[in-house]
Image (cartoon, rainbow, N blue to C red; front, side, top):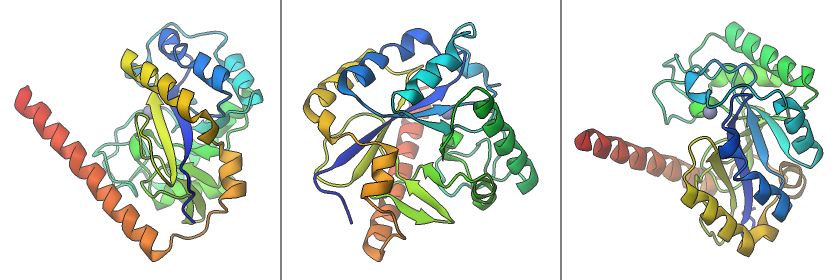
Length: 256
Ligand SMILES: [Zn+2]
């Protein structure tokens, strides 16, 4: 069933001890002021130089524990965030990703090691957020093996089950008013422009009550397999996102 009126989830990506504090702290007051229960996607062992935006924050892990205690849902965001594999993903938006195409044993090892790191820091990771949308059947198998049954990705407008996991779709990178469906807005705090902070605040002023949490999505929307109509919607939506991304890529190439 497509929820009506629309519901929203907020997701923050690329959290790790070297996250830009200034970038992150622009959004933190919004979470607190509007009582949002976001998805916080943490890289357990970041080795990606692009995510080294500040000296490692010794308080990072306690800050994440406090967020979880306040209602955030912790997600495992890959392992080291190094995107060197060129396998085909189940959500095929990028040519190179960390997980898609990597052999099953290595993926299982990375996922096990990543979960262990988060748990050692006192966190309770409950879902999977793939770097660059890159994951395949072997990723799903490894996640099931570790008891992770939920992921955040894909372009349907309802949560659904596939490959033994519940998929909570993630379709937006800025707030957009919708009449129906469940919409996850993904924010990269390291690189978000000031305009996005203002847009998010204005949107929350109007729609804070329509923001939900992972727990409520799972309990209230009772995800099952997609029906044919929603499957067609998802297929077309995925194709549109891919097409819009290639148009942007081509425009950038022409400009450069
Ligand atoms: Zn990422």
